[in-house]
Image 1 (cartoon, rainbow, N blue to C red):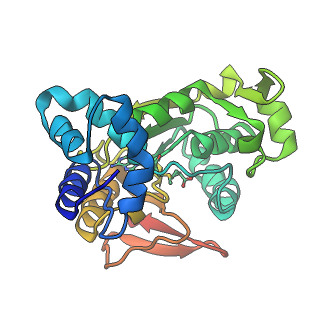
Image 2: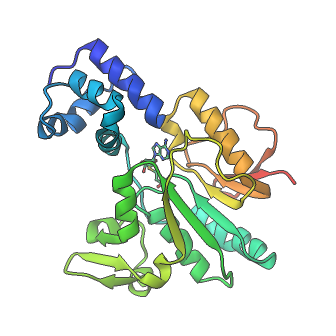
Length: 266
Ligand SMILES: C[S@@+](CC[C@H](N)C(=O)[O-])C[C@H]1O[C@@H](n2cnc3c(N)ncnc32)[C@H](O)[C@@H]1O
């Protein structure tokens, strides 16, 4: 597929307005690899035609599918280790002393992150904790909601004892999360650009490996929204390669050795 610079820029602008995802000047190859067949399969001729279609009010459904194609859903079980260790050792015991608490996974992809948290909670004395998991991509949320994973996905970070304890085997290569664990999570569609979120509701928020795709402006807006959604004394986990790039007054950095978490002041 031939993409002119102006067609590419028009597409990028629309994608960023709708999803926050900022492609930059040199990602034509990504658009080409993710959308060439998609454009053909939707009986369209070019990226320009696709951009025109998804700009129309009648193109909402197609736009959602384009967003599904353009999001990067890379994730794994217990990713980076330390957020889950810190949850297990510090946060779950402390918050459960105060009673029920709420956790939000704000870009949950195919579910490995919220299910990893649900496993920790299940192995603790916390009861009645609510986990809300959201993502922009409806396709990936559908996968998370089914909770069915293939061997190759399960090998990425899931300990064997947890596979046996929390999954039922579906066939030779796939396993499904047991209903008892799945029922602990509510999956919702949510675009992080749609502010405000639920105010002052959460003791813990995971928003990992999504802000790296956003412009500085959108990153700032989303961070402000997340801070508003935390209860005083609540914790925010960002991705291991992400950090606050400015002073976010109500947040203080807590070292978990290794890694960092941010705490909203009381
Ligand atoms: C790389 S995955 C990270 C998954 C998980 N948090 C982790 O760290 O393993 C990024 C996720 O962010 C989602 N995403 C991208 N833009 C978003 C937006 N504007 N609102 C909500 N989710 C978004 C994508 O659909 C994708 O599933």
